[in-house]
Image (cartoon, rainbow, N blue to C red; front, side, top):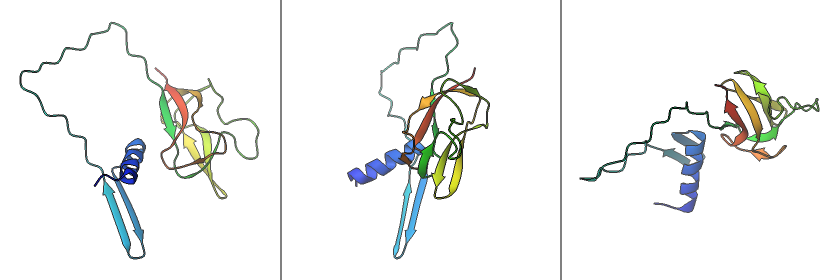
Length: 141
């Protein structure tokens, strides 16, 4: 079964890093599980070209900071004008750089590593879901 809705849900689960999703309701229980992707079968006689070796160290790639839950994305605390972290600002691991408002509760968005804030990928005060990308960051080297 490959309905467009299931494909969309599976893609959202992959983006959020979820392996299992369970929904329970009156008279209904739905469990979706994603397994590891299997490698394509080997073809006989096929050889892969070796990747070129670079003398320069690899530069870190931008990474998304994702929403800790569904709610409204905020770059600044509701009682303050200045953002919690400005674009281009270097920040330490564990720092709160944004918020997700769920009713009266503010969920912190923390950096998992030292990094530089590149900018928002979600619009200010937009509705976001669990795992949605909120900010782009560049890990510190």
